[in-house]
Image (cartoon, rainbow, N blue to C red; front, side, top):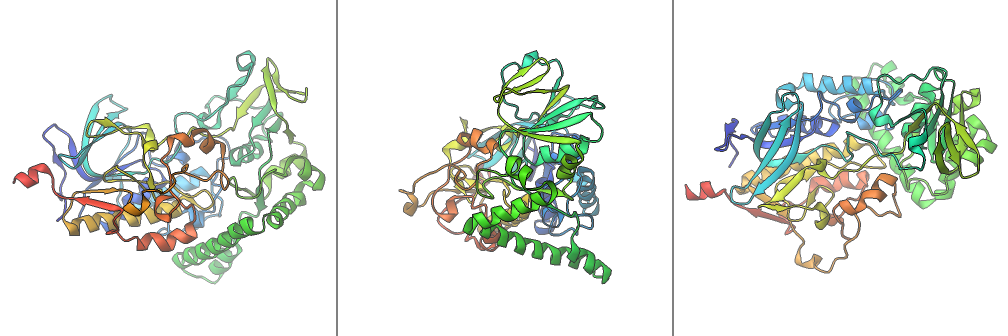
Length: 507
């Protein structure tokens, strides 16, 4: 059994597709590619709220925006990366544009389509998706057999900024990098960047030479890996005139092997790894500044580790164009920020590189047979599906490895699941706890002892729960999942299949 080969108009005027992909970022574009290659008989559409593809790389326009993962692993497995390992947003968008053009994906993508609601009907075994066309205000409806959620994990429209006392009194501008204003002028200004993660580490060197002075204000340090923005193995293979597709695969495998070893060492011998990371920073700024401002209180990999290409952040500090302050904020003042230590940092512009607002499956109003769906009431199946939620898969990537690695693995799973449903002649699949799972303890989505970034800690209560068995958790371990996900038994009792729609049964 296969779904209709052409799009149709449902009775209520909704346009129908076999698969509806939500989002045209790195996951959605990848999903579209895999649909064309692995499920060419199925119709699909990609709905994107923004004016173009790219997701994060389109919305974030702050100075210097770049990847914090290498593009040999952040890039798709099917599309060789030929640039520097750490890439700018412009380079990543160009790469994604090539994927769309080379594989004729553009006709499948509809921009400025913001999804507001998704309702599942067990009578028809269909999702009905309501959307607003943002350029015209038109209300649209789509039906689909399967929903593939590729919209990411944070709210694109606004970043997270804590509410500090006195913010309204500050006479300058307060800016979050996620909504960088076009008219922001930094020349000769005193700038304070609040934060210690990859965004702050990117912003400071990008603006240091254009503003009067920039201060990185952090509550606590994070780990960094400084290094050359080059890959010697790739460069050597290019000198040998090796084909780029081979280079991509060889370098990708080498990087993944090295990352696996590093991650295992971070858990097995954390003190040794800590000292290695600190030595890398100390080589730029010296042991005294490293101890004062770049020595975290937690063991490596409890939060994401940012790569600093060519140590540019630390070079700015050495040149005196940037300084680092480690302290807590007491309040904002008309002229800047008063710290708990009593020091006041003067500022004309304050940039809050303070993180994301998590959203769960796009802030869409989901319902099943007329009942509102709260994903926090569900249990996750391998971080992709959710108990009691039919015909839906969510792409949620890795924290300790490139997001796209999991996007590719999940794409393989979705396509294999769709093909399996066709062979079984069924229209509906859900996951459900098995009898042997009845007494399984249920825990938060991610173990905070192993990974605890602020955006997750603030919103963990919104996410599905996990169990203590591999099937019922998002392992965050690419090196395990790359072998396990392709071998998932789709006839395991955790998968519940049902048959045709009511109209098909009547016929």
